[in-house]
Length: 476
Image 1 (tube, rainbow, N blue to C red):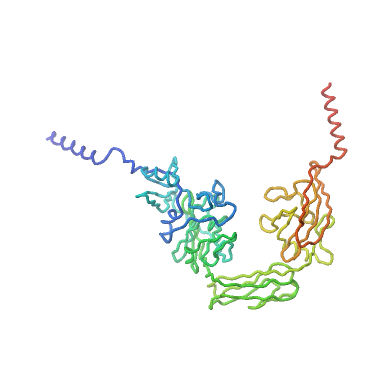
Image 2: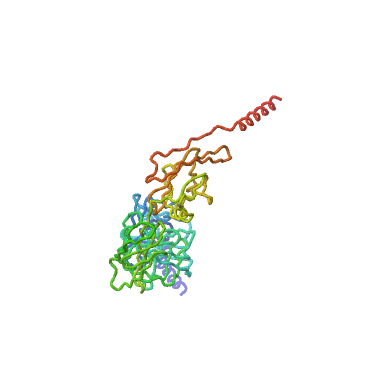
């Protein structure tokens, strides 16, 4: 009996060994790495096949589409080398049987360890399949906030999120609505810095730099309410709850106010293309009186002004028009080494000129005078800061005479003057000579500085004495 049992046991073991190999087949082994994943495949499972996310042709200039190195603006993306961002380079889990084809077609590179977040990728008959994100840390959900603007350089809507994950690379951003719609954002055209994300819904289809932006997949966002924004990083998901942020309906209307002379007067205002149920509330900057057809003003200073039209119900987006009130006057002068108030004008007139300063030209090079990168040419007392830098580069590099032109919004004529900069050794002294005048155009013959000035006699004498003592010491 024992012999029969032994024979049966041996037979069972033989069958078992035949059915189950000692090691898993190569097709069952999992390998972790990174690979280029097209936007369409990266987002497909994330947004429930709502639409196919296209690659994005550069919506910016200066080759920003290629700035994908560590710490750069589109870090984590890959491109076609000629202006189109195709998708992201992200961690994946794949079958070892698919490694060769993924290396060839998608730049697969193996990792030494399992990543915290990855997508499962497989290849069937040459077709790529990419899963929803596998987040081993578990999705992080936090409470934040957001503001929505319908006055963006980059499209119809711009949302700025507070509480987004900082100091990390954003591989994907998804805007989620109360109506259960999900909108995938792409780098440069939609994803920007500091928690700002913009898109077109079909009204504003040309962005700030003159590039056309896609809008078809975002048209349905009009009138929806954003409740959260999901961020995909190497650490996994982070979803920021932002309350309820309504996206007012955009339309192809226009508010237009004509430019006019400053002082006292009026200018025409027109409102066109508004929906019939738009309940207009019209306002303008302080000191202006406005109706649906006219803006009037008294003692208005030169500069840029705004007219705003809002929908009382909040259903539709607000509209804004800007116009300029201008003058031929120049209320500043450069004298005694300082920019001061010109004769016949008040300090308020000078302050208004400086508050509206748009650009500063120095020897033919133009610098912005507004925004975070504005040149700070003048000190508080009106004197020139000859140590001023722009993007960490000195503006006044060498001794010489510099032609400086100030262009201020609302002032029809620029103001030009000359200043001479003289630096001696490590001690900087400034000699300012001016020939100030108002001109209608910048100087066509800017003068550059001349390097080097003669050392004062006392310094030369000191140098000679030092040399004599050094030689005498060596002779001893």
